[in-house]
Image 1 (cartoon, helix red, strand yellow):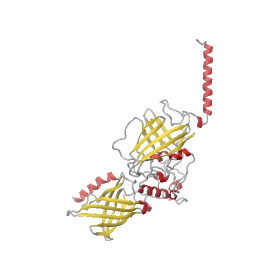
Image 2 (cartoon, each protein chain N blue to C red):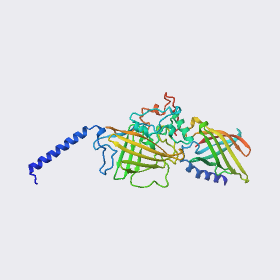
Image 3 (cartoon, one colour):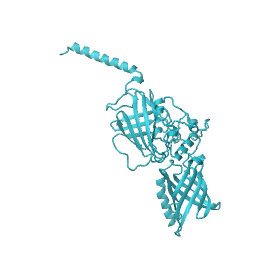
Image 4 (cartoon, each protein chain N blue to C red):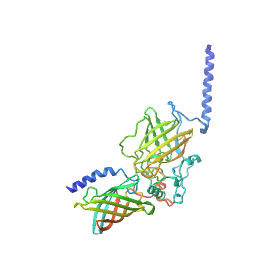
Length: 286
Length: 134
């Protein structure tokens, strides 16, 4: 069958109209029902759709749920945490602390001398659970994924996706050395090589240089990521354990320059005496 | 010659241990003094390591009175009490034992420059020690 020129123009017009209607319908869809975006490679995209902006925000700073009186100093239950996400977190009494690690963690509930609040880079859970949003940039040509966060020291982490192993000999660092791969639509990141200067999370989970972290990041729908972290550190814990959180897509936002405490309007909250009875006033940088 | 050996020992030691900053509260290099009285103080270097579940290290590495940490315990649930036993051999070939019983100062536990104090016993002599983590 051959179409006349007029017929072809009609078909083209109908197709164009369909595209316009489709785009309009898609644009009007609430984020909760929009499909999970994918890159040209087929991988799930953690980035903003073309022409749009947005960042991922942590659901909760906590990686451990308090369940004893001494742990009650914990604040900030998080705005977006769902029961499912909380289900990823262990209760305090379920964390397999070594005795010293448990007591140090409890001490840190009353003495929040957090390295993050004193301009240090962060790794593990605290690398993701930061204020003001996180960018996950997939440089597929480079076979790398970069995680940029706004808060803290405005630093970034590189996840090597080219199949390389961890170096056999490396200097310990705040973020460690990360390699990643996909398991279905879940990004699995394996990190070792941490120093002992940071905290695993904002509440002071301690670690040694033996820390080995596996993170599983899954975009469960357009507006939600599930972040799971498995902690293995025989120097601080008697066995491995896992925790996690929900992360929510915040559209129309971008990371901005937030260089440590420069311009920070919450200095009192981070390093001041405060009124909560929690000490954050150490002048000594950890 | 001995002084040179001592300094060389410290220089070799420092880069290895400066990578361990926080982690276990006892791990790191501690500097301070000990002695039987205020007028009888000797400077001391204590290098402590934490390997999964055991404390190790050296006291005065490179010095004639060097001692190897044989056992150590941190009682974190009861005021951060510290007990360290070390063994060495002096210049005359005689074995000696050093015992430190002390406590971490809880107020600066969050600092890398935390401190501990307590009693020191070595070769029948007792006194006090003061150490600050570098």
